[in-house]
Image 1 (cartoon, rainbow, N blue to C red):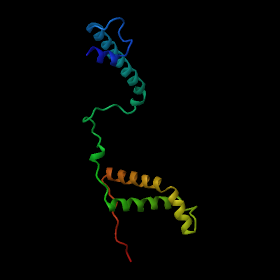
Image 2 (cartoon, one colour; image 1 turned 180 degrees about the vertical axis):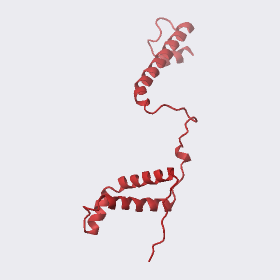
Image 3 (spheres, one colour; image 1 turned 90 degrees about the vertical axis):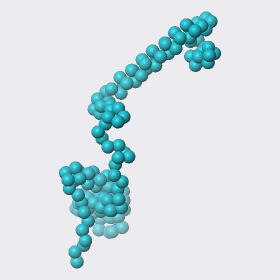
Image 4 (cartoon, one colour; image 1 turned 60 degrees about the vertical axis):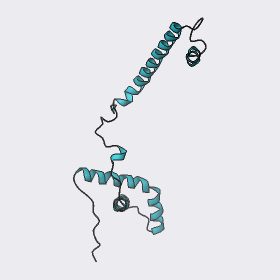
Amino acid sequence: QFDAVQELLGEKAVEGPATTESLVQALERLREQCYAQVLHTHAGHAATSEARPLTETGISTMATKTDRLEHTEEDLRLRRILARVLWNSDHKDDMPSDPAERKAAFDLVRRDYQKKALDLTRRLENNNLKLVETDKQS
C-alpha cells in the first residue's frame, strides 16, 4: 500500500523513509492543493457566471434538452416557409430579379433566417399564439 500511495504522490512527496504518518500528511497536503486549485478555478469562472448563476442538477426550472418537444415535419415546414417570408420581407427592395440568383442569395443566409424563424415561433408560443398553414384560396 505504501508503494502505491507514494507512486500516486510522486517520488519527492515524502522526505526520508515513507511511514504511515508521512504519507497521510502528504495526502492531506495534496488534498489542500486540490481544494485551492478548485477554488482558484471557481474564482476565475465567478466573473462570467455572475451573469448566469450556477445551478445544481435537478434544481433548474429550465427545460432540459430531453424535455423539449420534438419538432414535427409540419413545424419544420412552417419554419422553412417563415424563414423565406422573413428574407423576402428584409430584401424586398434589393431582391434579384432572376429566380436562380434569389435562390443563391437566400441559400447564403438560410440558417440565419431559420434561426430567426425559430425565435419568432417561440416568441409567439410564449404569448399563446401559433402559426398554422391554411389551405390556398383559389
